[in-house]
Image 1 (spheres, helix red, strand yellow):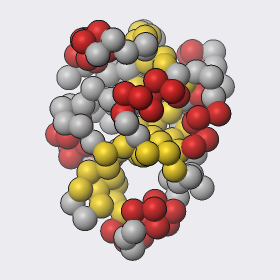
Image 2 (cartoon, one colour):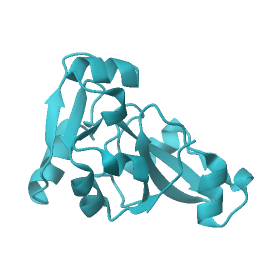
Image 3 (cartoon, rainbow, N blue to C red):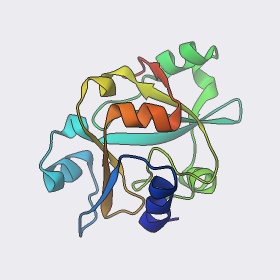
Image 4 (cartoon, rainbow, N blue to C red):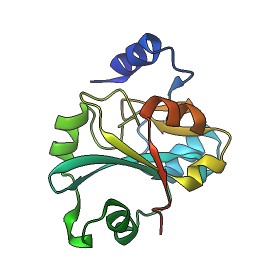
Length: 155
């Protein structure tokens, strides 16, 4: 999948979000923030975890790390049960490569958890479907589209 597929999803579901082509690959949160002239906190990342073989999408601020202990506690499992999905598995589930993954518009709908810190922001930027694109949206739009659970899972 790519930014065209993501744009079709946005259009089909009448989502208030814009894909922003950057013209270059941004390897880090800092690079993306600089290219967009925004705070690094406004960059979100979409991470796929496996918990008891169930895929779960976790969305948090780009500079924050997911606290696996908190995530495990929220999900009612031991910390060792919380594992990152491999890049190949994440691609198979979402249709997007790691580094370009949007928070929605995936091959299959994933249970989604959003860190509460994101909700304090006016505008956020997530993966735009390709390594040289980002998507602009609001945290409220993110919640509505993903039907996400709000949690405190950042370190």
